[in-house]
Image 1 (cartoon, rainbow, N blue to C red):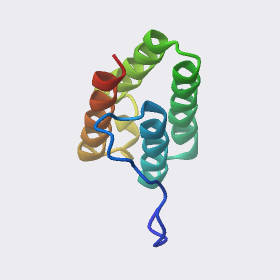
Image 2: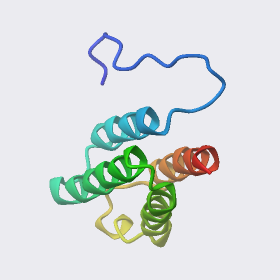
Image 3: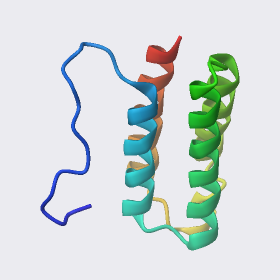
Length: 103
């Protein structure tokens, strides 16, 4: 978050911890500084995905994550001119990596 302290520590296990990854994604969404209603919606979807993963409902988490990506790719939020193409691409790329590692 730019305050000079480590927000997360990522172990070098070779695999991505999906919950940690989603927590990092939440910080990324907050750092983009979207309008509060859009930010809230995105954060709620991420929290729901974390809940599914912790309950070992990976297929539901993947479906929710794919819906999240679809909204980004539809530019539904881009119409508000707050999410740039670059920001959208970064989020889509991050989420794609996550889905590959959850399976």
